[in-house]
Length: 196
Ligand SMILES: [Ca+2]
Image (cartoon, rainbow, N blue to C red; front, side, top):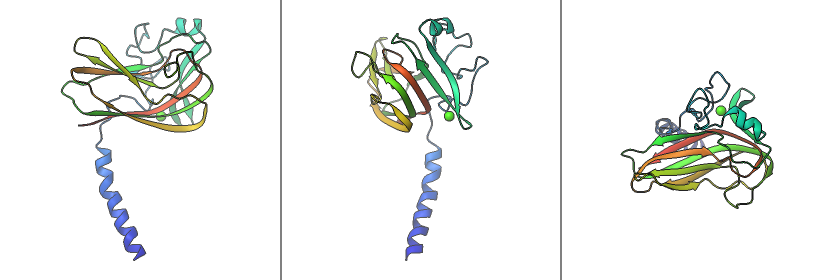
């Protein structure tokens, strides 16, 4: 009987696998496997020249405010490491996803580690996490974010949050929150999926 139960469970697992593999990640390079010539993650910069208006601040500005953004490795697995030694606001990496024709709920998840965190003065905002900002048809932004991370995390921990797509949403900006806090934030496996 036991072996029958196990066989049934295994068959159920096999049936479940193909469905899972078909889930589309709306974020590109969420694993940080792909980097540009400067060693920064592809797509998250939005521009090979890393201009100030792109997702990762200009190296001069990073240097000025004592921040670094780079792809590091955990064994062979690349991840994004953002270190901030001052509480200045800085772009640490973002990308914009088109939501044209999409309705329903976005599920946003990622893995993170964190050390030496000093949160900023605005509770729930001056902490490391992913900002999730829907950009509406009139150009306004509806800001939200994943669960605030308020304490150091020596081991990788996965965070998952759902966001209902507002009416008239044209796109959504997913950004590594770079305002207020100081410390070292590691992030990997950013996954954004749509539940219709
Ligand atoms: Ca990775």
